Length: 156
Image 1: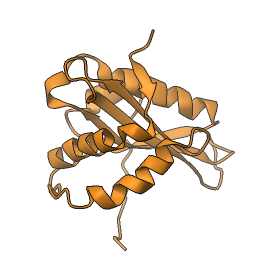
Image 2: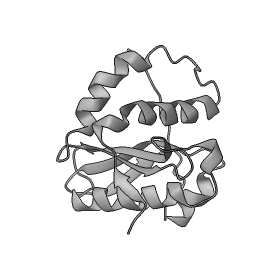
Image 3: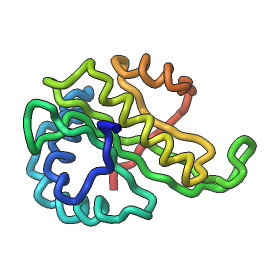
Image 4: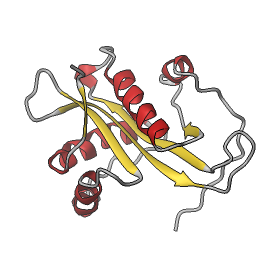
């Protein structure tokens, strides 16, 4: 039996807690948690949709009932097709976090395996993510390659 399960609406607060763990670890991350209360209703709704373009996979914390040990979240987006991905479906991994007290147990890898299977089931031809230096070995082991990308961002 797998330790990994699909996150449920009742996991929303813990999902946000682990997402904040990830944000706090990023260079220039914003430690503010005031936004959590506003994010909860939308997140609960999305976690309740089992057939949409959004999925979160989690592992329950073995030492703290009601807490999560690890989290992986992704979406499937449509982009106009291209060589290597003619149908234009692309997976995007945007949150991977492990509780500091539950690291080095393979939980993030197990969650990633489930998310990658979910992407394949939906016909995604590629999966993209942004990796921290600490996580690069995990992603490389899963087959991800570094792609020089002139990504820019505009906050609206």
